[in-house]
Structure formats: structure tokens, C-alpha cells
Length: 371
Ligand SMILES: Nc1ncnc2c1ncn2[C@@H]1O[C@H](COP(=O)(O)OP(=O)(O)OP(=O)(O)O)[C@@H](O)[C@H]1O
Image 1: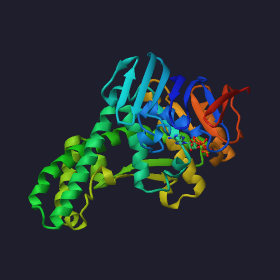
Image 2: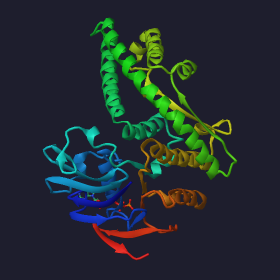
Image 3: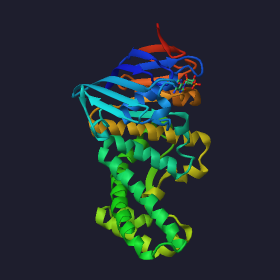
Image 4: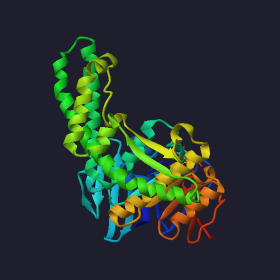
């Protein structure tokens, strides 16, 4: 798939702009603070309906303007799609696909699939479990829109359960009140764990393969899901069994959870275990090994999307080129090759590509350069 055209109105430091993209490499260059990442953020927004930089919709409206509007023309194997998105300061959102209004997010998610790679992603491996859960969930939300809803629902359950645990600790509520939330945590938590395990079964071999290529066969990456009662969960991957395991853990640790005032068990606490040649690379890997692992995880995301949807997603590389050494840069470019539409923001052009275009951004204005 590719994004062939993007229209922006009042998005960040852009006024009204219409940009045509190359189906392969699009380099967005320019000095600092000119609008390079803003452009990538706009493309990502068409894909996920949120900012990959974690910004609020409100912050993306051009200062002094009442709304922003984005429109993208997407070419896919199944045909052409136009996604139109608007947001105004009254917090109203407009979602349209091919000119007709859509109410639900999941009617738009999945049309333009994307993988973002930014310098923070190079730290997925060495940061805490939340970064790895975010990696896995981000991928899954695009591929399985219903997963997004289960996850949102689960987060609300955890929030309310945590409030209740604190109230019980302060003797403001009865302990029995927890039963209903335990049930909900078990049901939704098990759905999330089961889906993550299924996805990981496909993702792990893809990441291993990429890792082997980057390290020229010298290193072997093994990824496993880390959860409560690890061995049992990995063995029994039916939803009912996982639910049962979660319920047992919660029942047995109720007192402890009340004392701490937080939910200690469930997918919100899980992690990905990453072993390179038998060593836990999260804790003991060198900086280079951690970066290679992060790169492999990201590249595996591209391949997984291809195998699930039949098409490669688009790839957004935000400021990442200068963070990679020559070897990893060339692997990334070789991987994009002639098949993935890629958007690269960079202040320097210290890399080569075969087919594509270069755009220079200066204060929200765009100039196409000859390459
Ligand atoms: N809502 C907004 N309205 C207007 N301008 C904004 C808004 N949000 C950010 N900006 C401006 O956008 C610019 C930053 O753009 P961006 O983050 O795309 O920089 P960049 O070109 O990627 O730079 P770098 O190379 O430093 O990452 C800043 O000048 C900032 O003032």
C-alpha cells in the first residue's frame, strides 16, 4: 500500500498544503524545528487516529486556528481509499472514508497501516516492560481493531479496581466488592493475553530471522511472553484456562493487593522476554545488541503486517537514521528495498536509496529537490 497524496489544513505549523508522495522512498529533510516530524505525525494520524508522539489532538491544531483537517489518498491492492479527518477546538471529530461519514474508530483503523520507528524505539529493549507492551499492543491494535476496544476496556477495569483496592485499604468499602472486578479482570485480561500469545507465535520467528540476517548468523534472538504463572500460561492457551489462572492468582494474593492498593496480576504487568544467544539482552545486552534487537522487532512488525493483510504497511522513520551505524542503516534500507513506501525525516542525507524523492521543509513550506 502507499499514501500517494496528503492534504493538511492547520495541522501544527502547516497552513494549507497538498503533497504528492513517491510510492517508495520519501526523504523529508531540513533544519531543526521546521516541520519534518510534524509531517510524519500527520501521516501517522491518518493511520492510527492518534499522534505517535503521544500529543493530544488539541496540541496539533495550528496555533490561533479553530480546527485541523487531514486527508490522505491511499492506494491498496483492494482499491483506492480517501480518509478525511478533522478535529475542532470544541473537541468534535470528523471521520470520513471515501466521502462518507464514519462514527467508529475501527471503521478507519486498518485502512492505512503503518510502522513508526523513532529513536525512542531503539530503547524498547532496555526500557521497562511498558515499552515492550506498547510495542506489541501498538502493532496489534492496527491489525485487530477489536483488540483496541478490549484493551481500552481493560485499562478502565484496572483503574476502577485500583481505586476500589485503595478504598478497601482505607476501610471505606467492603472486600466483597472486589468479586465483580476480579471477574471482569479475568475475562478481559485473558482475552488480551491469549491474543498476544497468538501474535507472538508469528512475530517471534520473523524477528529471529531478521536478527540472524543483521548479525550475519552470529546471534540468535528468542522472544517469549512473560506473565503470571509463566509456564502454565504458555502451556494452556485457551481463554478459559488463562482466565482460571488469573483468577487463582488474584484470589491467592488479595490481601497483598489491598495492602499495595494496586492490581498486581494481569496483562498490564506482562513483558516480553528477549534472549540473545541465551543471555537476557534487556539486562545484560550491549548497547549494540539492544539496538539490533529493537531493529529486528520493528522489522518483524513490517513482515507480520504483510503476512496478516497481504500488503506491506508504510514505514515512518522519524530521525532514526543518524542514530544507527552504517551496518544497521544499510540493513534497514535493504529491507525497505523496492517494496515498502518509506518516509524518512533527517537533517543530513548520509545514506543512499535507489528510487524516491527528497523534500525540503522550511517553516512549514515544502520544496521538492532533484535527486
Ligand atoms: N500546534 C502548533 N501550531 C503551530 N506550530 C507548531 C505547533 N506545534 C508545533 N509547532 C511548531 O513546529 C515546529 C517543530 O516542528 P517539528 O517537530 O516537525 O520539527 P522538525 O523539523 O522535525 O525538527 P527536528 O529536526 O528538530 O526534530 C516548531 O517550530 C514548533 O513551534
